[in-house]
Length: 166
Image (cartoon, rainbow, N blue to C red; front, side):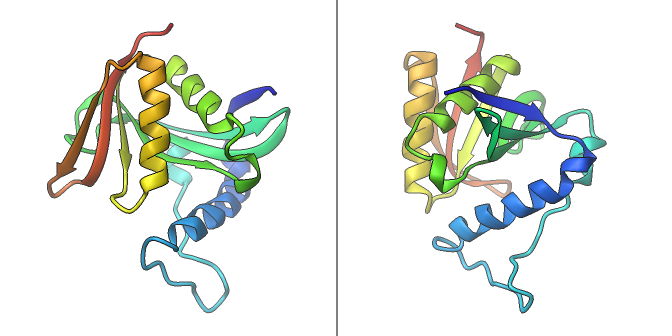
């Protein structure tokens, strides 16, 4: 299985928007996210991901086929500090879950962006928290901070660590 992070361009806007609908659909089980009258969830503006040099949007691909996306910022969502890599959003389509796709994609991101990281999960995302603890724990050989964060910027679980390559 060949898992890759493929950088996006504005031409990928429709693909990201379609994947976003699946992502939000998954979250709608845990959070009150209303379905609009047109049968879609509220979208997300992706234009900044191709304008701001500190934002990076990737498509996850498995053997060339589409499998999800990762949105990574080079700014802490918690403190606003630059130079901290933040996994802003991460999505693996259901047909690719529990096969190592998310693990491979996450590690590829950690390797691509060396330095301090913060990975956040919503309080209701028990499966996501378990996934990130397992992957980050394996990647860092247990050298990471796992904290409950609660302030005006974020409420939820956060893993902090430094990726320096393996």
